[in-house]
Length: 531
Image 1 (cartoon, rainbow, N blue to C red):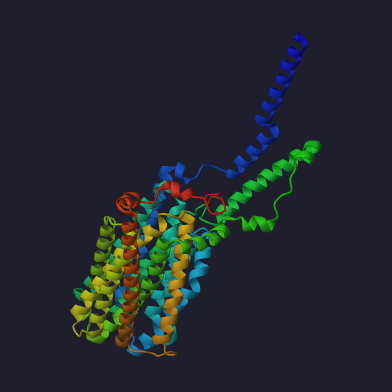
Image 2: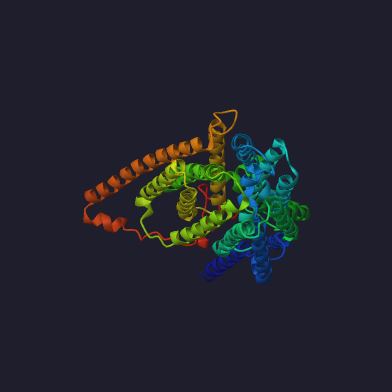
């Protein structure tokens, strides 16, 4: 008996020792961890608050400076003035359409290169394009040169994605919302300051459009210099994050191979077939997020706000591109002092900032009332477009334009948070990129049909009538959908009785910052976008 007990205890001790050996890290595992940790490099920018704060301040200053273009609100009057002497038909049907075409052609490459090259080269390209724009405005005299000017303007617009996403490479996810507000505020402040400065120079200092263009060239040249001084991030949302993961895996594999040579017997028993490159490509974060976009389409709330982003932003930018030509038709150019484009742009920018801020405090059940809110605001925008089409008073047209922009900017932060609140930061960027690209395609089709000289080549007033019809159709669709959603909601409440209301009672949705935990939300295949 004693012998059996002793033997049993000896067996147990040997079994426990074997388990402890399995649990304890081997020298091989420790070597792999050392190699991987060496590949990871020093801590990120989030661990160095002084460094990222300085980089954020520099980026915001850069955003402010590239927005200082006092002559930008007066480009259309400049082209129609005796200094350039282009006709209204040339500006409407031949020069302005080039902006949308170039934007559509450059948007996708700019989006991919921004992430692949880690932002800074695309910001430098944006600065170079800004300089080329104002050089062409200063020195160009032919129609072809002005079309090239609009082409580079489209390049500049496409490269804005680098500025808006660069900020996320500098800080940890917990600070995304705050620093994004800083960067957007810097841009809005720059646009407002630029518009006020340009209007003061035109109305009170009597400065010519040519001189004001030269001042704008000086500001954008300084902005180009600042872009060269920006730090070069070590990571980005998609490609460089995957490359970083592959470097870690390669380092681990290299360490394994060296240890396998030292212990060939152990390597023969523990080695597994490495995943093929095709499966690794299919499992990559970027490809998985492209597949995840299909699930976004199936969510009613995300689908609604994405469609709003595509269709309403299309109409909004069409109005922005052509409203200055409409103002010139209502009040033809006589002298610089009668042009108030800068003041109107400053007022609309200020109202847009106020409405965007106000939207953050709206508390309603968006799952029920989204379609109705969108429909009512779209109807108001349609009425303002009809007013701009029919009025002959320039001040009424100015006021209608300011309100039109304010209504759109009121819905922008709501749409942003409704889309972003249930997505990871990476998937959110991809969804916004797809929405913007689809909107740009639609915008190009409309311009090709109604504005381009190869299409109908409508005059600017007729175009605003088309925009009114476009927004009216959107209004009808939104209101019909709103009626369906509201009727279905109250019908479900009646069917469920009094208890259904308690079950469905959801706290009023306020536009709060996206929680940091949502950054690590897993994809449908179980992988994390933070991998």
